Length: 186
Image (cartoon, rainbow, N blue to C red; front, side, top):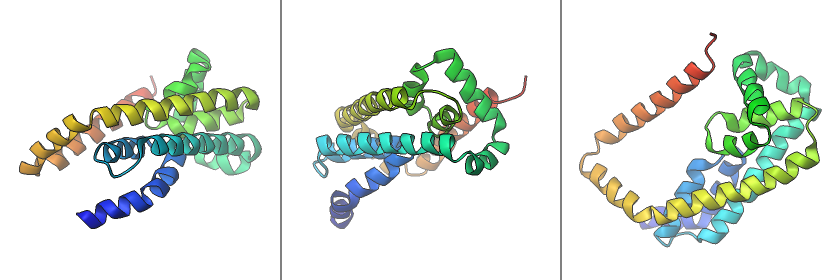
């Protein structure tokens, strides 16, 4: 166990950076929990997650704006999800840039959809930077301060390890059902 914690404290920041490029919600929550345990630095974890999340979204916007030929084949199989992202963008405007950071599945679609439009890159850059910082701080601090409760909760599962896969299966199933319902033709 000590080897795992040593590796996480050594390579955890690199893993956090790479994972946060593509969303990173699980990574920043994990970094907050490891910071609670004293194996990572919370401030450094928040900074790394915010920077990586910002860079990841900027890459997606630039791909949508300047590399449409490579992005469009991806959207052929995800037309409904792209339509949902565009509807949400029209309905919520700039707020969707913040909201999508917390919703699995929209993290990739919204920046690509924005890149396909004539939305101002300067405006997106400013809003994305602010939202990335808020996202990293809120999830990092929430997981850090919830660390005691979460570790007590997981110790309950430690005695009943058979419940962990069941819990994860139900959670993933509910997420899948929601997105199937949200993108269903009506």
